[in-house]
Image (tube, rainbow, N blue to C red; front, side, top):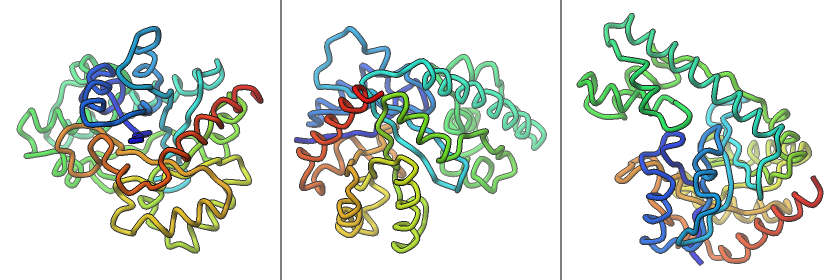
Length: 281
């Protein structure tokens, strides 16, 4: 099995439509995938009622306010009204945030057409959309420069997002029949002892799994984190965090599966947890 349980489409900050992404993933040998767009279900919803080359799980990814790099993946068989409304509210806040960043760039001498940026978005808007527009306008040479000089967390055009906390997001997902999984823990920059303590706190609040097999974890190695998560009795997941082809920060479809020895059993365990979450909703 070659699972990829973390992928983005044009409904958030990816560059492929949902159907294009499924086709590409299948061509590259992925056997089951999840669409986990930021603050929206639009991408996976677009595939409902249609046949796909490989199974596609319903997911989303929420950015949380507790600390830099803290994201929460959620997987479910559908989405209850409360969760959908919460996600829609977060998406609306993204548009407000993007407008404020574009206004800051205007003040800095880099005017962009916010209405055009919004019109091009197929779903939620984020810094990546602004960065791509800056590249197209010739203000920066590439996306990395846009973030490094302007849009990064310490950049002059940065605006903090209005986000949920982990303590708010976990019960929201659980009571709506979703399985919450911590995304890319390596991006938190914590040592093993600190991470173990955080995972324990979040597990008590409802966290059910950890995305062990993510490209950002490769530099630190997968085995220690894998063992830690299993000892804690939580689900182990993995994915590329695919956004676009030739992405130097994220991965390509299925890229972490080669390191994931128990991919079949772990993916089956996630799907079982999703089914049980709906029953216990």
